[in-house]
Image (cartoon, rainbow, N blue to C red):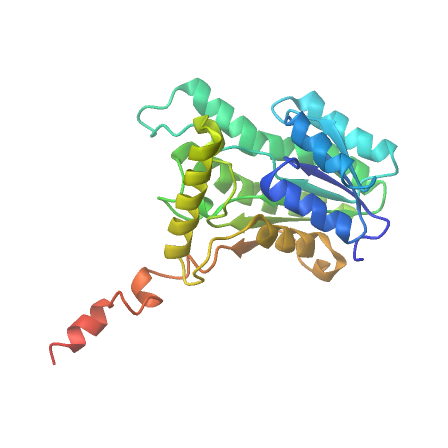
Length: 275
């Protein structure tokens, strides 16, 4: 019960990584307030939680909604933990084609919302003597080819914002870190395609197979994998950690495929055959 007596806010908590994290924090003793535009999903998780999880409709594109979410937590007893997680895939257009409006909306959804979450949470945490903030970035922040350009750029911004905020808020005993997921089987990208249930299931299976083939740990990542990392960063077990990130990617970024897949010979292995 690492979070007994703690109060947490999770944005994007009605599904996927946010839902898994809300459940993990609640299972370890926290009272969790989730914010999401998915009212059905939000009420469902709250209703099934026995009072451990509460829901407030929150559109993170609206600064007032973010501020109101943090204030609700404070009014109910205070705010100790914030998981800035809400997001979607954003525009898929390449940089040579994306409209200014689509670019701005993607940045607002994925980066501005994180900045404002920190902005409105920090004063509330400071008056309680500290707190822990965890932001969701992405493996796409570390390299190209993992996700669309606008999404990847925003997630890279989240990593740098995490460092800046950690420096700014250290004086208030507020730690700020990020979690960096790899290929996780959630609906973050398929949701924007407006697929029916059968095709969504097919897409999820494709993502799972691609993920399992793309990394040394040969299984797709799950929301629970990310929730475990978030819970660690939010806990006192990480009390000496701030301004950094945990990469949860199944080893995808450790090197080129020949470095971990015996079926893909490296250049040196091929040269050795010439001896």
